[in-house]
Length: 144
Image (cartoon, rainbow, N blue to C red; front, side, top):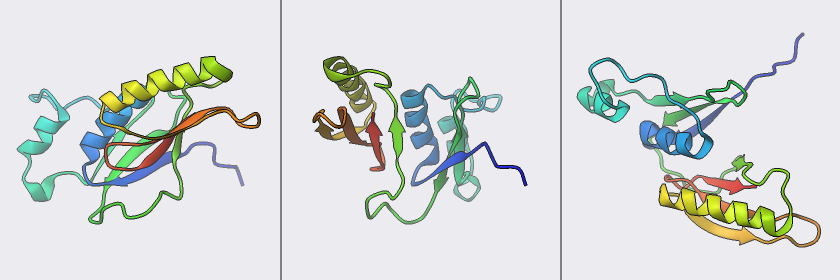
């Protein structure tokens, strides 16, 4: 039996389109083309009766290298810490002050998009710096 080599990451959320737009900005991902006659997906979704609005929305890496990310509307809100989270590899290969400067700059960009900065974990001789954050719906992720 062949090993599966492709994954999709699925996030439960309240507003799939809005969360997809946020993560597209974070990751440089793209959403499918907007239906003809509409300027944005939000405009298209508002044109639909509430019962016909999609319960999911996806975005993908335009290079094809990263996994597709699916945002799935669920009725319940987030109540506890995520068991799985995304690590956004903004400082890959960097160390020390150079790494921290890149992470802090990316943190500022994401806060401007609506993310929340929770805590900066500074290098301690064993681990490099990383920043704990939350997306616009409270899902935890790390700038790594």
